[in-house]
Amino acid sequence: MVLPLPKNRGELAAWQGRRKLAAVEQARKSAFFQGKLDHIDLARLDDPEEWAKIPTLDKEMLRAIPEDRFFAEFCIGDRRQVAEYWRSGGATGRPLFYPRSFTDIEHAMVAFARSYQMMGLEARDIVHNSFPLGVHPAGQMWARAAAAVGAGVNWVGSGAGTPSAVQLQLLGLMRPSVWIGMPSYGLHLANLAEVEGQNDLFAPIGRILTSAEPLSQAKREKLARMWGAEVFDAFGMTEISLMGCESPAHDGLHIWTDLAYIEVLDETSLEPVPEGQPGTLVTTSLCTNSLTPFLRWNSGDIVSYHETGATDGPFAVFPVIRHAHRTAGFFKIRGVNINHGEFEDFIFADRAVADFKAEAVNQGDLDQLRLSIEVARGADGAALTAALAAGIKRSFEVSPEVVVLERGTLAREFESSIKAPRFVDRRGT
Image 1: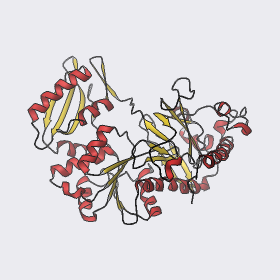
Image 2: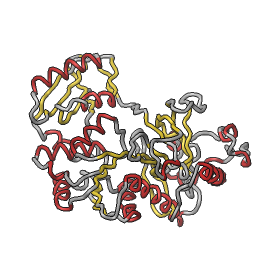
Image 3: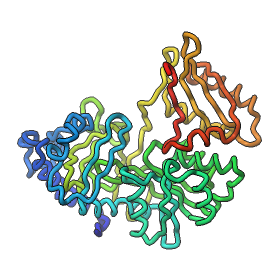
Image 4: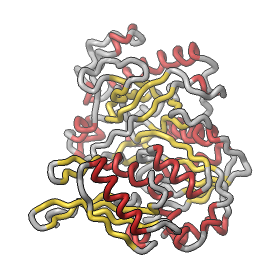
């Protein structure tokens, strides 16, 4: 499947117009959409007011469909068209499984290959792939897409499948030039390598590609510092495919809007927000919709939209989104909400912290925040403990219990998890 990049915005808009029409026609074949699209004038889909008449769709609506009826009630087409199934993230409830046709996979391969192209991968590059290899598609798709740009790839998988000690051995043996995986696992590998005195294993790695979890500026800087590499972020969702990646300008995620039509809307009114203002991301699949008609899909991601980015290359034809990095994850300690993302940024901003774990625990009749840290080589543990306790009290209005752990403790504890469980609520357990 070859899908040439649009030459200009006019060509892109014309393509979107044709594919939006095809997307609505596909959705009309689904039992789920019966009666919900009859009022839509197909000849006026490029009119924002007409397009806005299409109801938005979210995961809770799909979860309301019985599992054994999902294919019949939401999906379209024939089971003989199914090439494979993709598992949704399932971070906020029961995961869903979406069928993908052979044509869908071809289009998705274009999307994953573009992320490599934006990073500047060449035939001489070797990719160490630490994304999970399983029913969630990212790891397998990135592994397969490497061939599209002529790069080599090691199908390693996450630490849950290939122990981190073995991953370090493979980094030393294969000497790859690119590492891809979740940012939390990248930090985990870096901490383990430092404990083992094997930081030199990262020397050949010049670029890192992360996805599947938020990448804040503090986490990005720590990852880049520990690996000595340039960090690129990518964004996608199982319902659509990979949707975009950073350029070397690192000014946001260029969204391939020939594959996915996007809107940024007010969270409450679902009216468009001005450029640059945060809103909820609503996405319509333009190409990977032969079996799953994702029409105006509200993913819950909070982003801002920017018509142009800093890059002047061929991907400049696409707009940029920037994540607001909001998260629903928080501890409520003695009536105070502690946002997990903000707390992680606060801790990772201190270079003396090698790694950490935060736990909400019971201490008698009161809640307590327990912060377990590992101290970077050469740092003063006592001074760091005092500084963190004072900073957390000042910034989050909670006095924590700070525990210093031996280096490598958290690496061993996190080893069996795909994503390091740095926030744990142990109250009532």
